[in-house]
Every structure is written in structure tokens, then in C-alpha cells.
Length: 291
Image 1 (cartoon, rainbow, N blue to C red):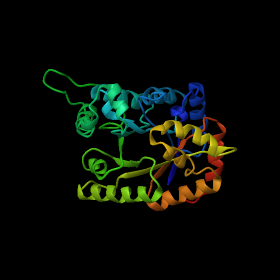
Image 2 (cartoon, rainbow, N blue to C red):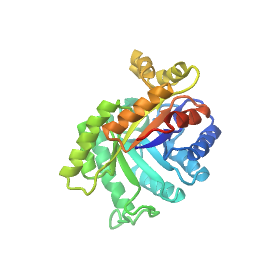
Image 3 (cartoon, rainbow, N blue to C red):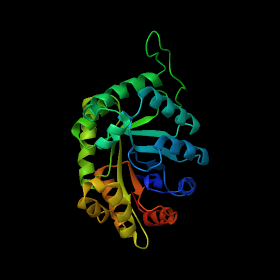
């Protein structure tokens, strides 16, 4: 199993310069990817623009949205942005996509919240057409640029329901279990593999787990400061979440091992503390692991 590290771009008030330096340092470490999460009604940095900046200061590490809330965006523009980012990064983009769960994001975007699943299905079909170079209609020609990867960037579908996983049968290259515990992620992974096989798709889906982490002095308190703000809508559960994430090297190693046993091909560890030492602390925690 491979390890990715989240950019601190969703932490309120983070300096964009720190995000870019984070990317540079992470690329020098044992990490295979950089990820970031998406919201609209929150003071996070916009994911696609952030990854465009990150592409300019890195050359090896993969760039992942984990995940981008596709229904909030115009489909044709999103497809063009993704193909452009894929070109600038020389094929390093992995587009993790989901539908979102916060009604305020959809109200702000003027998108019907309760139609987001149907909208997402239509988006996936249209983006595949755009990336393949097809004209949209007799009157509307192809939308470029041509993605580096034939057929478009790698697409991982995220979600917490069987319906989300079933989209793999038509549109996805893999599944990302967002913020799920290893045992729950493992159940999603088994269902994803079943859906993949029943659809007669070759090989197997790429399976990615994800979890928050924080390390170092006062890690629990620092992580709680962010997570209780980000998940304020969850009330007291937000504080409980902060106390359940791995905040010691031993807990990191256990978490990594259990995700590997659950069948994950990659684990994305999202940052909760916007301090550069978090990169080195995480690298030290996973050093020597046989996964």
C-alpha cells in the first residue's frame, strides 16, 4: 500500500506559500500523492486552482482531489479545467469526485441539493465525452485541450452509500472512502470490487482510504481546533472525531496497517495542523513499515 499526504489548504487562514512549500517537501519524502478536500461555504482554498499552483512547484508526486464536489460546478468548465491541469502536471492528476452533503454549499452555488446525484451522473457521462474529443452536438464542437491520459484523467468516485459505489460500473477507475474507519472502508472496498466484477470490467478498481492525522506536541488540541470548526454542524461529534484520529506514531502505524489489511491500494492522510514539521513527523512514523 502506498501513502499520500493531504495539503493543509482547507485549514482556515493557511498561508498559500506554506501550502506550496508543503508540496515541495512532501515530494522529497516517501509520499506518492498530494490530496485536498472541497467545500464552497468555508474559508478553504479552491482545490483546482491550488493544484494548478502545486503542479508548478512539483514534478513527480500525483495531484489528487479527495474529493471535488462536482455538482457545484459547470460540467464543461470542470472538464476543461481538469484536462488543463492534467496537461500542466504532465498527466499527474487524479480526479476524486463526489456529490457532497452540505446543503449550504448547494444553496450558495444555486444548485438543487436533492438532485445532486442525478446531476452527478449526467456530469460523469458528459465529461467522458468531452475528454474523448467528441463534439457536444452538431452545433457545438469539441472542447479541449486533449488530456494527457487517453480518455481523461483517472477518476475515483467517493461517497458513503451503495449508490455511490455503483457508479463505478460505468464511470470510475476506482473508489475513495472519505474519512471512513478501516473496517467501514473495507466493506466499501469489497462492494466496489463486486460491482467492478459484475460489470465485467478488466483488472480491479483502485481503492483509496483516507483519514485525518496530527502529530507532535499538543496534537489532539490542535487537531480539535480545526476539526471542531470544519465539522461545527455536527455539534459535539466534531470533538469526538478529533479525539479518534491518529495523533501518535504508534497510532499512525496501526492505522496504516489496518487500511492495508482492509485492501486499500493507497491511504491519504489529511493534515489537521498547518505546520511543516507534520510532513517529517509523518514520514518518520511510517518509516520501515512493511505494507
